[in-house]
Image (cartoon, rainbow, N blue to C red; front, side, top):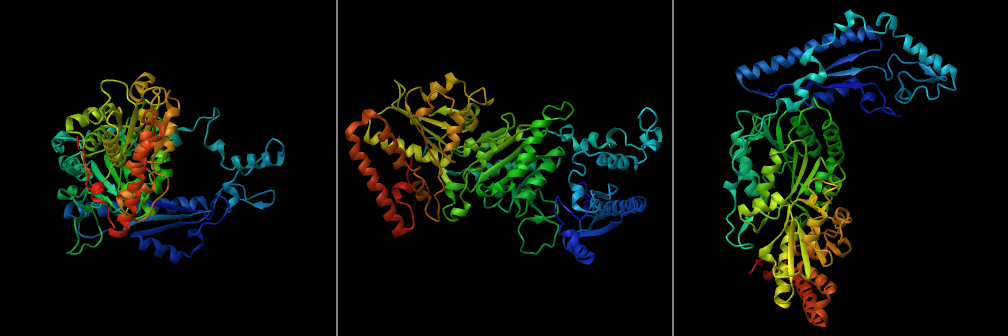
Length: 596
């Protein structure tokens, strides 16, 4: 009713690089049935005579376009009544069509060899040069170009003009068509945090109410969609379904939930389809938000690669206008997939993302709901980036009020003064964290340190923008050497609790002064179906292991720390015994809150 249409053309030339293709080797009837089953009305253009095939294609295009226009007209005049059968074209022609029939006595046209370099050594094989010359002359260039090599006017006149040219079509240069989203003030959705580490909220549920109102404000422009592999509700974004539905044009049963042909939420259990839809949507001048389980976003690794490369290249093409950023929200993450198990535990997408150019990629790890709101607002306003946000969906402690969250996210990294006690001197140890669960465990570890070593000076550093850890010379968000040294010190041990694989932090920070004293805990490929706290214990990211890291590395704690270390080891044993008996975490772990 509102959208354009795509006419798919499947070109079946029989072969790929060195083998036949499956669809080219099944019967005509089977191939037709396949695409009818996909919901298409297939038309076939077939042959090896160029003049005949050209006429077939012209006639078939006229038929297909007329059918598309009729489908659109019916929907726009009478409203949506049933899922249409869209036309598509199957074009079957020989591979290497009109090229050399044979090279060195081996079949080339109509065979996979035409996919390769048909003449590999023209300089040393004159017979290949002659074949190339004959091939080029077979196109009768003397009838196409004048004596100066210029295309003759009657052919040049056939080329489209202005916006009809493929490269100048505004819909292929989405930045020209892009309108800013109408955005509510995200501050209005903030969680009240009167004291750090006391209030409980679900970060993505809070973000979902913000996304709901963005959807509502942009209904008239119809330029915002949320996409995901059947996880909108699971990822706590169900508030958006208060103002729109899931897009659905197949049969709708009375018991179905939030399905309509006019929905703005796109769900299909295929991350590749979601990625493709979103890329097309952004490239044609709209905005989108892709929500996915963290472990399964890896399915689109290569698609992300190509989009990031495209963004990098087009940044330097002046007529190519900036498009809305591609925004990922990765939730149901590694540390809270305790019920689904090892197959759902993989935080490695961010390792993959940071391989791309610094001018393109951004990675955010908001520790609570208010920081997630601030980051989401920023990402939806940005242009020409790939933004990756990793945030939990389960009820969790909240640390920053909305004003503090804005300041923290604007800087991307900062010392949490309320959690630190080194204000009157140098710290003895720096406790750093990035990610919601690592932040929780770090703060709980600091609590233990305060209880047992009240004279120990501890600095707590939280990282929300991962790229701040790189040097300024490597990433525009990176810290200067002076700022990094001021925050992390030049000579104190740094115990870093990280959401993902530990080596990523080392990779980002290895050029900094104090890298040798940075000790990173993170996911080390240990997982199963277990309790939330046991997940961090399995990977030695828990509060007890973090405190033991401090004991191992801070000389001033001396021999008195042996009693505390033994106590911590006992607590780990108690933890294992408790979860084996009750299937849940100990209350002192499950119900812990920041006590200061």
